[in-house]
Image (cartoon, rainbow, N blue to C red; front, side, top):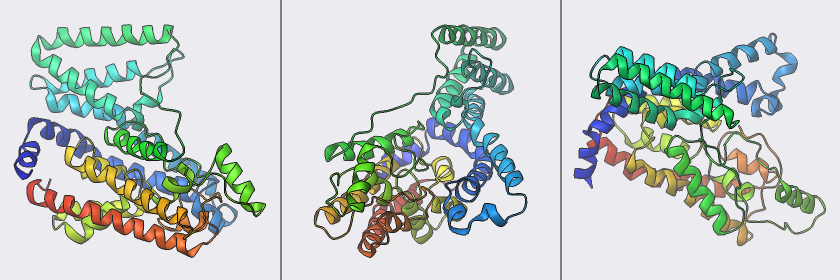
Amino acid sequence: MKKLLHRYFHSRFYEILTATFQPLLPLVLLGTYAQALLVAAFSRNGFFTEVFGIKSWLPGYALIRQGLSMLTAYTLGLLGLLTAIFAARAVARRNPTLAMLVAGVGFLVLNTTRLAMLGPGLGLGGLLMGLVFGLLVGWLLNLARPRLTASLIIIFAVAIRLGLNALAVGEISPSFTGIPHGGVGVLLAVIANSVLAWFGLTPLIDPLSPLLTGPTATANLTAVLAHKTVPYLTTIGTLYRPFALFGGVGGTLGLIIAILLADRRRTQRQLAKWSLVPGLVNLNLPLLVGYPLLLNPLMLIPFTLAPLAATALAWVALHLHLMTAAVYHVPATTPGPMLAWLATNGNWPALIVAVIGLAASVAIYWPFVKMLEEVAPDV
């Protein structure tokens, strides 16, 4: 295993990923902190907004909110585009400046709607698409005369965009719907969520989306308020969302703790410290691009197993009647295990189960962190 990992971390592919994402990390940190403040303290459903009533007493609340929105939009909202640009530069051996220009313009063209508006594929939903497009542009410019190839790439991008506009396709970033509930369906959704996020695609279940919505959540809450048995125990809202998304998709709050406890590399410890604050409100983009988690074959294992273990622990506790079901709506930005505690109306066994699930996540990430410490360079 260590030999394979050593080959991976010294491969051309890993070199390209590092050259693509490392320059973006300061921008990612800035944007993630702005987004954390925006969604947790300056949005209507933010945890700190509701707990402290910030809007009612903070001067300039609306202006600060507007500034945070702009920071988030012009950092994280352009991350797919910037990924394409830096990936092209990393691959191009002949005229990297031209490669960056062509990748940027081409990706903008592909993500422009027929109303001349920029599509959401330029942001987080376009990470994988941006990476693939940048790699393709850089590779093509290495093959033939750069100026002619650059012109052809832009022409083809315009032609593809016109074709998509004619078909009324607004964006090229993939989206996913139809989240299953019940038993195996929940476990499959947990796996799918981690895999999609690992690829840099939009996950099925966004940690920042409303916690308990839909007919099953409504039926559960109605039953509890009427002092009846909860009809739907095994759902995304009762298992995965309150117990397995601490720190974001992959339960990466456990990874942050494991890094701080076990990783002696200075750069990675610093990254974990910077990631802790947004991780408490379930944002993990700095870890995805900086640790790195994205497209790292080793880290896909704990990135999937950690939320699976936390979900399974919650399932066992719920079906053994050791705790009550999470049926109450609370802000999605509620820090860590408090999410489960508040969603169960202050049920202490639920809090204990959530803490055990977090500890299990740390234990699962721990050996992988130690393995990376031995074989991965500290960049």
